[in-house]
Length: 263
Length: 321
Ligand SMILES: Cc1cc2nc3c(=O)[nH]c(=O)nc-3n(C[C@H](O)[C@H](O)[C@H](O)COP(=O)(O)OP(=O)(O)OC[C@H]3O[C@@H](n4cnc5c(N)ncnc54)[C@H](O)[C@@H]3O)c2cc1C
Image (cartoon, rainbow over all chains, first blue to last red; front, top):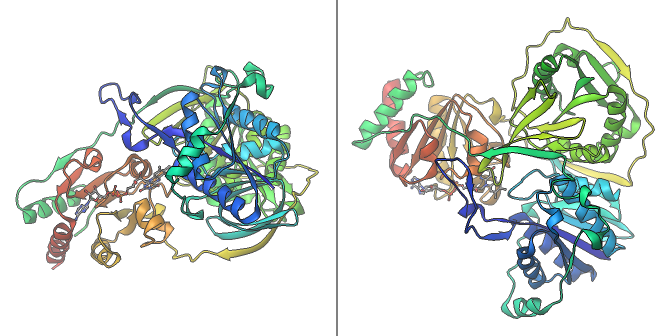
């Protein structure tokens, strides 16, 4: 069984700030990390390796520094990694991203299972998984909180939906997106980190993936972003002062005046 | 040319019809809805009542159970027939897995989780706003492909008034559906407490400032005094599981806009704000004067919730007499 995990390196949300005068995001000097839920996808692949002797692959589309994310995945136990990197891939939307990932998965070949997180923590669209499934013409199993079993060319998963947990069986090959609840990702140990740093990782660009430059990056993207600014929140910002009792009374009176409380 | 809306959830479909009517008005086109499922023929009435001029019906045995593969295929057929300029899809979990599959079949873009939609009349573009980059910013975007697709979370737009006297045109769409090689083995119902936090007029919400589950009793008491519903931040529902997911507010939880949202012991990280920043009045109680929640609050008390809540409860009780 061959399993491919798709991951994304994102700006650490904890370090992101907005410039109050321009309302634009400041990304200078902000460190990057593997998107949280992607670690759950990596962990799940490693568990499939341990349980079913799966051969595991990790891919990411990103700039050269995304190599760090791949090394971390290798250190967690993934067997092989490919960096999908090309200036032509820059500013890809979910459609263009899925095209690059689909090309890489086809190039890896004979893939039984594709694993992704339910969504990335930055874009949070949850669209790359289903788009990739559509491009590869695979059955998709989203919001998976448990892989129940794999065997006989089939996979059984439990999906977390609004109305309940849906246990579904699908024929392999298939695409699965996982939730944060599926597992607790392991930490890489030092010897594994050392070994991972020595592993050969190939970089595939548009040419290697057989993609035309117009299909990918900004040119191949359907979505055009006009602007991205922090929202303005016109709020009163009244902080009550004085003794606690007085603050509490002023708060209640203010809320009564606003028509919110009726006591 | 039409504006087409789809949600498997009738409530959400109604909300989308409300917004869709506005967009269709701007574009000068009709408003259409897609009705998909098994045995759904004849159930168009509600869609007309909420504003649809045309309902495209795909009634097919393969549409039960819900598989995104078949729904995307059926919707692609409706798109062929209706030739919509704009498609709005409800961002329920089922909608969120179907919309990108459809968009990819159509080689089209899709604005995921739009919080605001308008039309650029001159260019006939659908302009969408959505939280981006860990919800730190709001991106304004459009799609250069047609049809222009957006998904919209439940409760983003108001449900329009219902008019049962409205009638419209029914178009039956014939499809040839291949069922994916999938089987639903079981559906384990989630325990539903019956709270719909989106409907609450007042919300008192808790975060990690609470030290143990029992301490939520204080907030419950406050809530019952003023008739509020309990909300919470992600860690309370997802990690600690002190409250069911129905109470979870934020980017990955529920979007709420009550008359008052009181955040108690919640730091106010952007992902939390993404779910409540449209509340009419925001109140913050937090012991850290630097907590980001105060920046978005109308009224704030800087203090230990273990002192503030009892004081607040006592005062409210004394006012009630
Ligand atoms: C992709 C993504 C999606 C997410 N979606 C959501 C979401 O939908 N909803 C959500 O809430 N979060 C979400 N998060 C998580 C979010 O980033 C924060 O981690 C979370 O909101 C923090 O919850 P909190 O405010 O309860 O906890 P903390 O950030 O730990 O804040 C606790 C606060 O309590 C205060 N406090 C402590 N003790 C007291 C006391 N005795 N009295 C008064 N105040 C006290 C502290 O000063 C602090 O401000 C998401 C994150 C990601 C990456």
